[in-house]
Image (cartoon, rainbow, N blue to C red):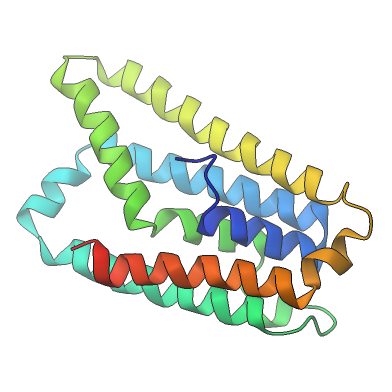
Length: 182
């Protein structure tokens, strides 16, 4: 699920194209820590929170959709100097993008609940959480580092076609949240 292109991939590529590989690396670290935060919540029973407050997942869905739509807008805007004034920064964007990703919330709950159902200890569940979060961060750091290996990467990633593709990925993810996942 992490390897497939989606909003996380589009976010890292957008940030690399507009701010460079260091900013893309910060976004990747934010994605990993967002994953870790979700995994910790999963280990310690976020699913029971959703059982007691089912409207909470709906709220997260809408907040996530608004975030993804905002990321699409950022993709569609041309690069104008420093983009830091328009956004919250690469690390924060990575963290938020992963932390409010309903698909990832459900994925992590399923993984962790399977471990719990098999009487796997909490400490081993935490080891799995750390491993998954590290894999997420390392994968997207690799993506950020490889993206700049493209000759004229900033020009390629800021080309209207690339911005439309990445913006489209964000839009598809937002529509998925609003229409498909209920």
